[in-house]
Image 1 (cartoon, rainbow, N blue to C red):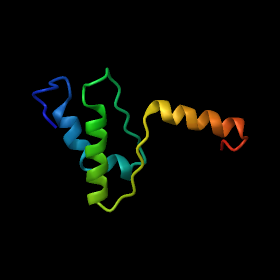
Image 2 (spheres, rainbow, N blue to C red):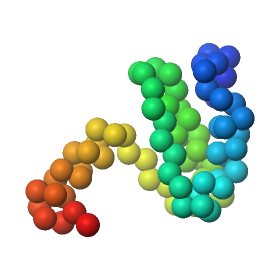
Image 3 (cartoon, one colour):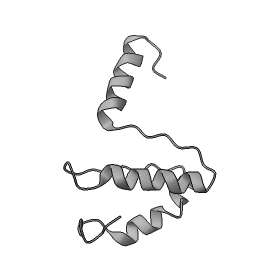
Length: 79
């Protein structure tokens, strides 16, 4: 990730996420920001790092997640 391109991203926080400790602690990671600031890039990087650590990954953007949840609700299969 080019931290010079997006200096508002906290390099230390991203480095800490790369340890995968958030997975061990059953915590989620959510990147919020405007278009084009690197959210997908960071999420993909974390996913790749998780795979390197033999962890299963799942990536979904917010819109897709909401659509899937609405459909599950309509089909009465939302847990």
